[in-house]
Image (cartoon, rainbow, N blue to C red):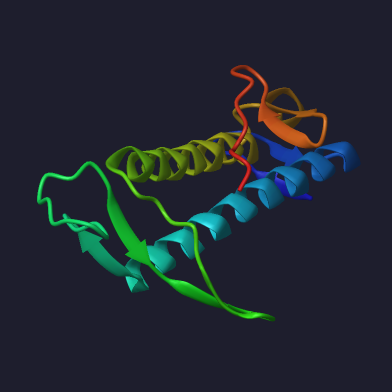
Length: 137
């Protein structure tokens, strides 16, 4: 696979570079899909903010989002965020995906060799210099 880097000679991906590229893209795609599904579940769920099963509190620390999925046994409630902190964590995961996309873009455009930027740790791909992984779903 040959691409031209910005102001550089063509980038030649070796077979091992191609394996890294495909593995990293799969990691990014899996996380992106999980985030899109969570976004859709939050968007289409029924929100209860300031209400609990036992009382009404407009300053409550938690909220409830009800969304159901069809299973073999019938309907099952989805596990969705219940606090501001959990929503902020989802935002951080979105930022992490953006960072990974930027990292791979740097490799495609010839600024860094992909084999130096990404490494495999067990079954996970990590950004080599920070040892950062994308979260598991």
